[in-house]
Length: 68
Image 1: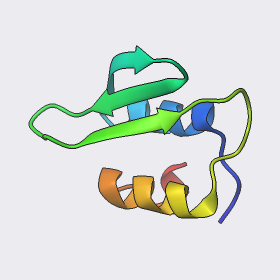
Image 2 (image 1 turned 90 degrees about the vertical axis):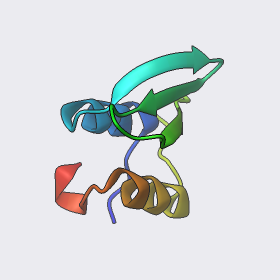
Image 3 (image 1 turned 60 degrees about the vertical axis):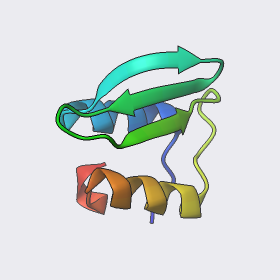
């Protein structure tokens, strides 16, 4: 799995229908209409997300690696 920063993952979420609900510190909270699921993406400059966290986010958001 390739390294993806929080900024890049947030852009991928927005391309797939997720919208930014609020920002608290360095965490951007995303939600999708008709879903109670929330994703809190840590955005620390261009620092890459850890592999386990990225896999979890992709599973929750129903994204494939090709969607990034």
